[in-house]
Length: 448
Image 1 (tube, rainbow, N blue to C red):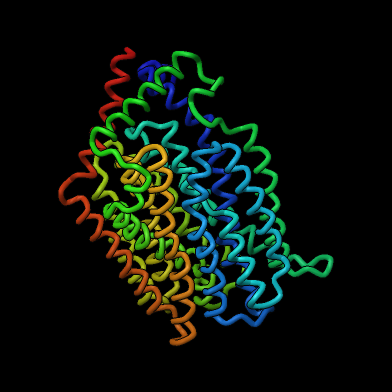
Image 2 (cartoon, helix red, strand yellow; image 1 turned 120 degrees about the horizontal axis):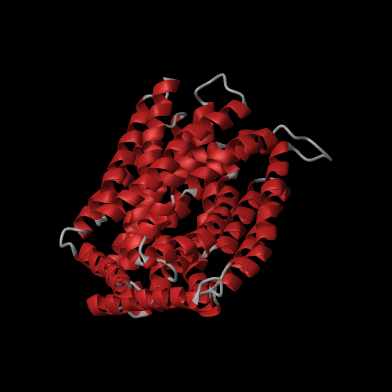
């Protein structure tokens, strides 16, 4: 190990130090965020029966979160850029934790819809803010792998959260039902972590007293060089970023990926329950399988993209794999083993596309334009978080099966892959990414 460390360049040692300082904590934050966002999928195993929710009511309520998220996403991310990540992310976490815990008050359709909408408002800006925050600390040459590690929190929230959530469904204390205890138990940690953020996150490298002076100098120089390179390739103002066709097309790509992600996440427990003869706890453990494989694929594929220096195909190929898996699961739903394999392939494809996707907009934009552009892309993509669950619920009520809903999600994943290839056809995205990647290597060589 010591010999390997000695072979690291000074720049790699700085990146490793920053990674160990920031990424584990950021993964924890996103783990709690995503768990609070999708734990309604596990609550639905008993909540829907208790509150007489149809599949359409549940799907609409699960997805309405993203309406509030969409409306407040861009303003929230701009506020983060102006006020600083530490203060704004802390505010987001505390407010969403309070609303998530308040889900215990759900008594019917109206309260379900209102609380899910308010949860989206409270959490708006968290994910794009974190992606934007990573651009403060990591040169683009390292970004796909770093984003991949950060996004592992998504499948991990199911790997770890699934058995916990389904176990909580069996808790009945003080007149509260299991699904209510689920919301309480998983909402309070967000509030607590919001206060921890204030002391643990550092806004920018210039303020990182846990780095030595030479380390701060190297990192700030590399990131400054990248900003200059981005502006040389094509500088965007905030207004230009928000009206740029490429930004909107990237939003369409993200829409196609994320509609599968949320349709999958919100309905997976009930799809697996539909295999028949399974307890809620068994459903929780089976939910681990596709998410565990997806977590591994997400990290390995992001690392492969960084090493290959290629982005476009590293988004398109997993999008096509995700479409294949979702389509296959539509036809093998009556065969539990084959259905689980197909769902696992779908999860691998959908999740593996995410970390490399986020290298594309961060290679184009910087400063306030990056804050607004990333938030716009995330907002457009997360609208699918409304349409995906709601669509599956509507189709399920209409056809009494999940097949046609899963096929619809697969079609959107194909669309995401095709648009990605069209965007990369003139190689503009990859040229900008290559130029940015070279700045880190040049600065590292200069430091030697």
